[in-house]
Length: 279
Image 1 (cartoon, helix red, strand yellow):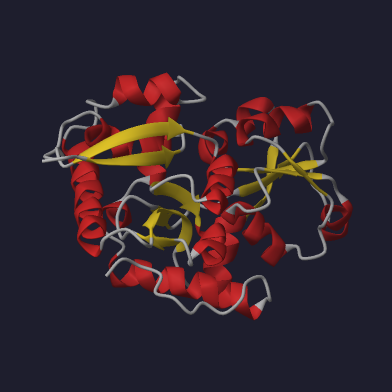
Image 2 (cartoon, one colour):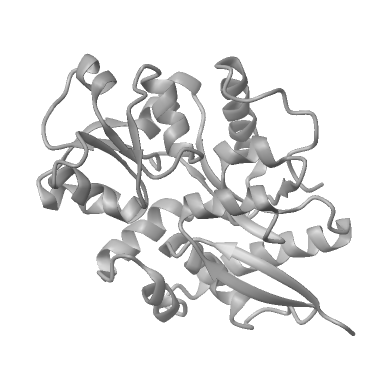
């Protein structure tokens, strides 16, 4: 039987490598597929989605709306939950007016983090795009007044003397009464339905494998992580990988729909016509 050769794009962050370790290391019954794996920064992945480069890809929910003609979301493998949102940080406290005028370092225009910043501070338009791991240093070196941090930096900024101005995850939960959708796993819409469903099942099995044997992926996770500290890696995985990574369920799907409803209400996206999820 010939194999389906698929290009897979995920981030180098511990949650993604933890989730995809079993799938990409021959630990599942996935002989039907052969994966060519790339590890790219979240905004680089968002941009690659626009190019339709990957067959299966991790992308920000803020990007999904623009890519629904090309991609459809799986119900497994994503990052969604409570208390998982990005943080707006700085060297010292700032008023809302100061934040509106500040130069803010962001991890990408198309990230969910920037979408939430736009909801909370619509007048804050002075932004500078950086790789997420460079944002803390940009603030410390006064190359930016404030910064929007995601991933491992959530656990390290205080050690560098920086403070949180706003937890945008908490903000989202307050205005929406909903879980926060950060990033999901998308497959090409034109792929055969049978293959999409098989991939969804494989990703779910990969997450379940990771939970059953959490240490098995440690070498792979550390090989790609921006922070090699085991405690930081464990905190990262514990925060971003949860039951919704196994399957969104009704609560997760509702959160995603709420996210898009809010984006439409604010004029940030057009109305969604095509089905969001693989059936």
